Length: 202
Image 1 (cartoon, rainbow, N blue to C red):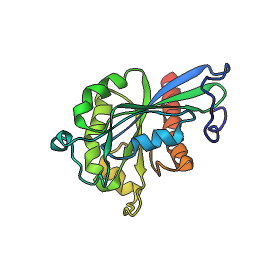
Image 2: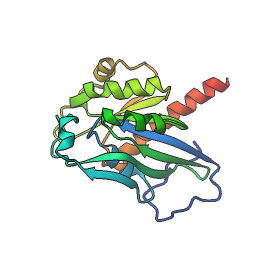
Image 3: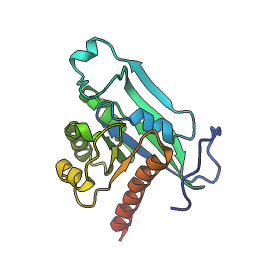
Image 4: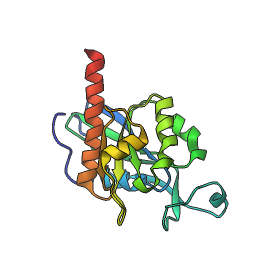
C-alpha cells in the first residue's frame, strides 16, 4: 500500500490524474446487517443508495427476525468511492441482502476483486448463504463482525469455527457507523487480496 487511507470525505467528484488502478470491492451480508451504513461511512463522495421502504408484500418473503425497527431495504445496490493512495481507488458496491436478489449478486460479482462480508453475530447463521454464493462465484473475501449496540460479543475464534472459515480468511470486528474501525476492516481485505496476488505471481 502506497499510503494510508485518505482522511475524511471529500467534495471532489473527479479522480486525481495520478490514479492508475481502480478496484471493485463488494460489501455483502445478510439483510439488515449494515451494508448501506458501511458504504456511506467509507465513501468520500456522496454515496448512491437504492434504499426503498419495505412493503407488506415483502414481509411474506423476507426474514425480519433480528432486524429491529428497520423500515427500508436496498433493492439494487449501494455505491461509494474510496481513494486509498494517489494511485489506487476502490469502488464499493453494497449488495441487497435478501436471497431473492441472488441474480443481482451474480451480476455484481463480475469484475470484483474481492468482498467484505458483514455479519451480525446474533444472526450469524444467516451468513452461510452469503458466504456460499461468494465461494460459488470464486470471489475472495474477508469477514467483519459488525458491532451493534447492546449485542453480546463473542470470541473471534469461536465465530471463526461457527462460520467454518479457512485459517487464512481474515476475520475482524468493526462498527459500520465508525470510519476508523470500518477502515481497518476494509484494509484487512485489501491486505489479504494483495497477499493472494503476490502468491499467484510467485
